[in-house]
Length: 128
Image 1 (cartoon, rainbow, N blue to C red):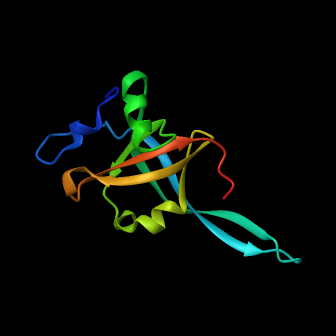
Image 2 (cartoon, rainbow, N blue to C red):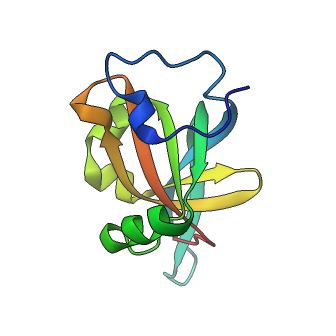
């Protein structure tokens, strides 16, 4: 349903059509343990699987986003979750979507409302 919507469409007081959050994404958090010789071993643990609106950035929008977040390639809009209130926690997370992995650069509460969050993400291999 839906098509692409700009993150501003999710502002408080605006009606968001049913079906706009139409992609399943999995939020994962890194867990670091040590192997037998003391080297780090990174394991990704699922935190939540949620519905999202995936908004790839293109053209001017991508250039503007990269001036703030070096490698932002997508915005992913999800319903508010308390786990994103702590920026340190968010820095240790990634999104798994359609067999691809995205670093989470920032989790922005739209107009500080507790309704939707924009995840500014960068696509690429995330090992830890």
